[in-house]
Image (tube, rainbow, N blue to C red; front, side):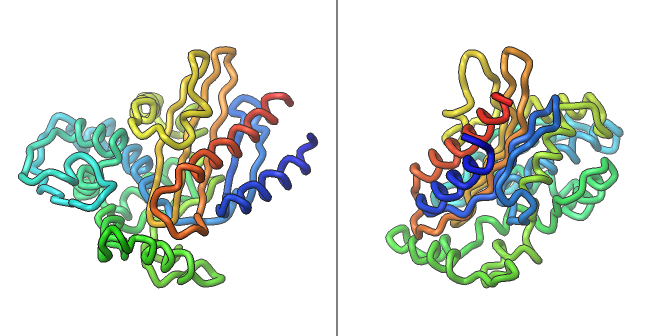
Length: 300
């Protein structure tokens, strides 16, 4: 199948599966890439924890922050499905900054992330990204806002109503009645911007090698592996990634490294058009689309 036919087929499969997808796969050695709407800005959800980890690690390297310093973290006390780690704690805990980095990135712990945002506020994270020649990702708010959406205001039996609102209350200019989905107010990034960040972490860039290695290690130990990982994990590959989920948004970014030396950066950002919380078929479809693009590039 030629490239144009492949892209048409993937668009149709995503649409038939109830997904609007923005994808980009890039060969990190040749720079060749394939994508679908790679420059569309979408809310980042928990993907924002990757630039947060980068900014924190950079400040530790500079000596502005000591990773061994412990901070008292207030319990999240969240009881709705989804949040992990400190977000579900009932009592305060003292945690080292290095360990908050692990919890925030590898477990996608929002309370741990907000403890890091206390040290490096969103605007400072964006400034550090710009200082490292990384554009296209905007960090505007902490992760606490991600657990204060309509889905938390309905009981479990009515979760579909929150998803229906997420699907139907947007505007043509990507504004939204739900602020976390409004690209003028939310943390945002495009598939291309996320792939650019991954490329900067995996290949020589303005990011210090020690910082890049640390963030790569965190992504390699991501424990949320239900989305793209099944199609990119094997004895002959290493899959390092971060997921992002919010209402009808399902994202994942990552790098697959093959034992033959080939490496591909991948970003899959999607909006579901189906008002349901649990959609394993959507996760599988995302992975299949990303793998099809990777396979096509690998054959080239």
